Image (cartoon, rainbow, N blue to C red):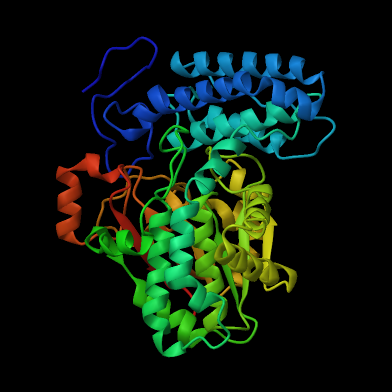
Length: 451
């Protein structure tokens, strides 16, 4: 049913139909709520942060930063107004000092303009495109500032998320993790059960998503091990044993595992624990972490976030067990068993189903791995091209032309798409679509293309 709104042509008072990309034009979809409510709140909080931290920013970047603060606040205010009034998306301003993918983004805007028979607008274009455009254009405008060109508007929230979780992290390390990851005499007879535990810690760590909470701070409290075990029934797809067979039986000397990271803070900590455990059970394995090139989706991990966490853990003198684990992580980096990669594809305009054609270098890297682990909801959306497939669609089929190697998705469900569900679960989410977006359900979902 069409809904009259002169600002949003063809607004439909429906959920997203099956077989179509998620879009703000469907009024009952999470895409519509995001563009109408969540993204404007995120932009407003950036302005608040700039105002509250004005003096600190000036101390860091010099007195000239005051002009930069005014400039970026003006841009963000205008961007928010254009979004709420469904104006056309604008090309990125080019930066003559830094070569980046701004021209690629602008070419993609031209492409979208041709296929949509007009310049895309916020509510009428694909949600994945316009949401990524918001973060990319914000990063571009910051890069054009005179003094604050490397400013991360989300840094404080990301660091606070981890700092607020320290007591739970310390408890978890003391009770469980230290004896496994910091013990050269680890008993591998327990490795299958321990693998599942680390997998679930990383999975449920994905609930720490500051873009889902519109930037509101979060923290892990209580004993994460107990909390994780209480959520077993909420894992609606669980292919963990298939993945165990890969890491336990199929890994050869110097095989690679790639982890495409999602959120910094507590989730990153759980990802590092999983990565360290994979090296513990397969000592010749190399782990490559893929991070974002720009501050992205509020809490996504950058190189700076990754290195900050290792440094912070190593400086916690009053938490010796955290320090010990931090040293273990740092040693893995120093020995080049772990490595970090920045690739512009992760913050580019294309989804992963287009990677074989549009990101041949990255696709080749992933094809050389034994397993690629994709963390979080945005990566899941990009794996599926953000298409609202029928819920019982086979995961491998939904991946389309993206088949570089064995794929594992660890994701708490925070957007209204999901595939690979049993008929019973598909029926449940058909009746309770609101449950798709709350983060209370999760998937451990694998697709095998190579052994």
